[in-house]
Structures are given as C-alpha cells and as structure tokens.
Image 1 (tube, rainbow, N blue to C red):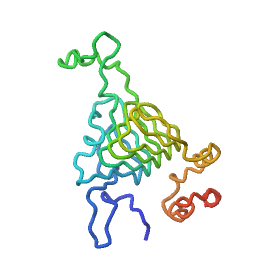
Image 2 (tube, one colour; image 1 turned 60 degrees about the vertical axis):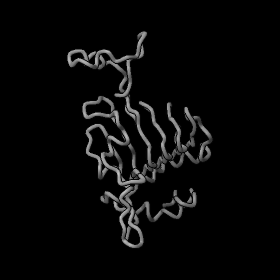
Image 3 (cartoon, rainbow, N blue to C red; image 1 turned 135 degrees about the vertical axis):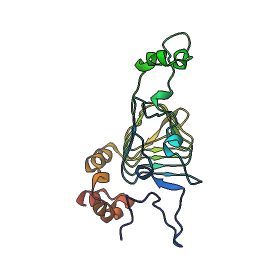
Image 4 (cartoon, one colour; image 1 turned 180 degrees about the vertical axis):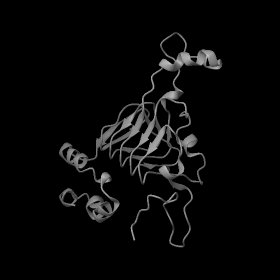
Length: 211
C-alpha cells in the first residue's frame, strides 16, 4: 500500500484509525481561481482549518490580478500567511492612503499597482507563523524558519530566517543543488518516489541518481 494518497483531503490517519483533521492537502480543499497547488502539499493547523484560502492568503481575491502558485510537496505550518499583491497601497505619492478604493468609479485607478505572482517551489518547508510578502519566489527545497518575514526571493535549497528574513546557509553545495534541481524527483510518479525514499531520506545522491 502506498504511503501517500494525493486524493485524500486529510492525509494523516493515526494507528487507531483517527483522521487528523488539522492537516489538509491544499489542492483537495481549495477552490480559488487565483491559487494553484501541486499534489501532496499540505497545511497543518492546530484546529481543523476552515476557509483555507482566506486563512493562508487573506488578501487574494477572486478578482485579483496576481496568483499564488504552490508547487508539490510543500509543507506549511500553522499560521503561515501569504500577503499577496492585492494588499499593496499606492506608494508613489506623498500618502499611501488608498483614497480611491472607496468609490467603484475610481477603484480602477489602482489597476496599475504592481501585481506580481507569489511562487513557492516544490518541497519547501515554511515554518510556524511565517509571512511571505507580495511577489516573492521561494526556490525548491528551501526552509523558512518559524516566525520569519520573507521579503525577497529565496534561492533553491536555502535556509532563511528572521524579520526580514536573511540567508542562514545553503543546505547543500552548489554542485549538489544543481543536480537535485535537474533530477527534480518531485515530478516523478509517486511509486517511483516512494521506491526512492531510502535515497531521499538519507541524502544518498548516487542512489537517487540511479533511481
């Protein structure tokens, strides 16, 4: 029996048969025109989450111009939020007060505000209570420490933390990172991924390459 079931809304079942309602596969519970999520990416909450789009991306509306793109095998801890471009205020003048949003006929004046997609690469782990700011791209295999505020792009296989977040270290050497990105195991069929788990879990690049 495979370890993972991409179609399960709640992917964790305890030994006694109890379904852990606080952990959800995002693409099984999100129906939002501006959010795309890869298989096996999950959000884990202390309570059974409701309104997942409103919880993780409170400023992303169906009419927003930007998108939130989450790759496969992403792990989101309790309290993670994406502050997307629709939260922005005009900053080119002397005031950032959004005067014109209060009338339908002038709201369109803000259509020229920057609207950049937020992109989370595959196999990214974002820790408890972190904020990801508008338009950020987080590269594959990266780790965001708990409580971080990510204000700029994160290179693949980096560990970042703090407010604003700063690089702590790369997880692997440049050569290994290049090879991992080329292998892109997260795009393999799930049976191949599970067969390669000993290599993935032990960090055996030669075995992963052979898989």
